[in-house]
Image (cartoon, rainbow, N blue to C red; front, side, top):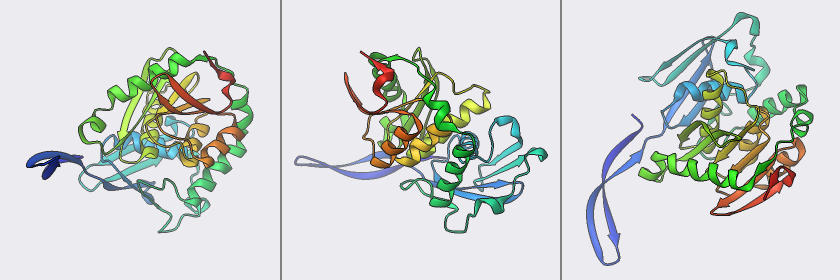
Length: 270
């Protein structure tokens, strides 16, 4: 269960009425790797399989869905059990995660140890050069269309106003995945995980979001080598700095027929 009905009192001008409203439920979800607790994510308890796959990919624990031997979601205790293929050689001690940094809430995104883990993976794989070598050209109208489709399709946001959405589109603005979560970074992990389990690559795709483009959000796009990221919201300095360094075209405030391009604008035509 990820939402419930409650009675509220609404005041509109000079009228005061009682009515039934729907609110979202946040839940602490634990991910275990090879029976060992790794991370505790505060999230919307929906699409948990995709969340786990996307998170493990984002932080560099896996590079593909094939590296997962099995995944089991316990929707009663809200635990996700992941067994990796033996050849993966996963060692939790390399993560340097403690009981505090294990927790990822819905506001601040990932904690510093996880952030350091991602950056280490990016450096090892020379990701910046690979993204900079991608030179897709998109028309501004394609960005507007993708954002509009995402906003139209985020039904939980329209019903409750309490969550973020993320979506991945191909360069013909065909929807490949759309997910929602209380945390903007969780929503991104969910769409990444969805494409990974479908064995769909991240070549020639566009990532869209309803949330602020923070460093944590941009890191996830960098990890997937997605060259263009767009949001209806603002970009934060940390996100802009990372997008510039790694070759991401970062776009914010996509509303109506306008947008702000913060980095690498050469990929967007009018």
